[in-house]
Length: 310
Image (cartoon, rainbow, N blue to C red):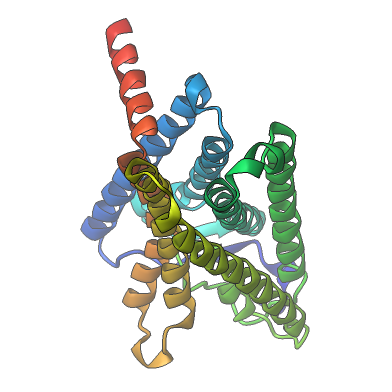
């Protein structure tokens, strides 16, 4: 294939080379996607229906759950389809759409994790200014800015990546479309533009990471000064789930992309890609619901009410 204009489809990485293992992967992905849909769906429903959860923290948690759902629905269904029907094809436009939505949702997730860190910082370190700094208008503006920034980020990377001429075949070494795999097919030095965009992205992500670290340093310095033991316990119970989710998000992504080439292998790369692209979206609602008593009670009430009606 001489250039990208002649490409009609890409070949994704097969999850296994035997039909029985393909079906096993289909079942695993089905279980993962159902768990993600159930967990994030319950969080969204509980926050939307529970009037006592209409606070900035849970508003941003609802947006985080929406981004998790979108991310799962972008990559997993196609992998399940390919496993079930023993195929590897994805159309050129389908690959572009998958890349766009995956970038859109995972970048939105990182922005909301950063905003949620700011929410915890203001709540614990500047409680008297909480209503002013995180009023309903301010929360709506921050959420809109996060979604808009994620949209522009995804659009910019997708447009630039798929404007590159591709002449090294159509085989992607990944079970979904992602930028590094497509760049490997490029036959033009213009891919340095995309590398430049990736460098800018890394700097922005590093800025968010530094902000998160700085905020938690201030939070952990402020918590011991809270006079009541109940207040300290509540502060930790709202911060630790967020810290766990951020750590999982960053550590899996960094290890997947920055691991030494000496330990790289197709099977390891596949396992790591599932780890960073799928598993955090499944574990996030579980992490939050286990630590937030209010959310746990709201989810329990939601399930109880649904069971009583049926």
